[in-house]
Length: 267
Image 1 (cartoon, one colour):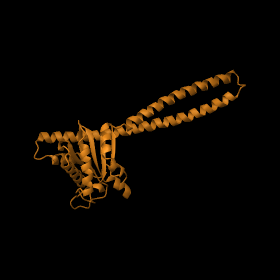
Image 2 (cartoon, rainbow, N blue to C red):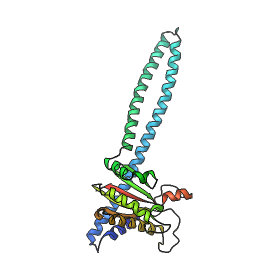
Image 3 (cartoon, rainbow, N blue to C red):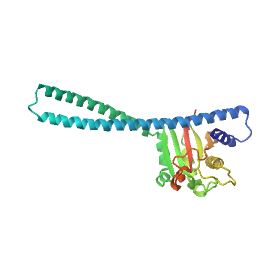
C-alpha cells in the first residue's frame, strides 16, 4: 500500500499523462527509495547497538581493572611473600597490563563508532545554520545518518486539525526551508506525511492514508512555489504505519503527526 501511495504522489507531480515506461521507472524509483529508507534505519540501529556493546565492554573491563589493582596493592603490601606469591603477583601484573591494552583499544573503537554515528556533513551544518532559529524554537528537528538528512516538522505548525491546507505559519517555515534546500546539491527531496492512529472520521479524507498523502503533496507544492526544483521533489503518505512513539498518550500521538522532508543521495 505504501508503494502505491508513493507512486500516486509521483504521478500527481507530473504535468500530464505518462507513458508506461515512465510509470514503471517511477515505480522502480519508489521501491529503491523504500529499500534505501529501510537500509538507513538498519544501519543506524546497528551503529547504536555497536556503541552500546562497546560501552558495556569498557564498563566491565574497568571494574575488572579496579579489582586487579586492589589485589595487586594487597599483594605488594605482603613483604614476606614467598616465591610462589611473587610469581602470582607477576601474573597479576601481566594480566593488568593486558587488560589496560584491551581497554585502550576498545576506548578507541568506541570513540570511532561515536564519531561515525555523529559525523555531520557540511551540507547538514549549512542547513542547520540556515534553520537555527526554527530549530531552537522547537519547530523543526534536523538529523543526518550516512548522508541522508531529514527535516522534521510537527503537523500543528503546518496544518489545522484534520486539514491538508498549509497555514500562514507553515508557509513561512516552508519558505525558509526552501531557501536552504536550494543550496543542497546532488540530493532528491522526498516529502513524507505521517499521522497518529486516530481515525479521520470520514469526510474529505476517508483514512489516514489519504490525509498523510494530501499533506505531503501540499508541502511539495509549497516548496515548488518557493523555487525548489520540482524534478527533485516527490511525496509519500505513510498514514499511521511508521510511528516514532507509541500511540498511547496525547503527547506521543502528537509526535507521530509529522511531516518529514528527506534528502537522500540520488540513486
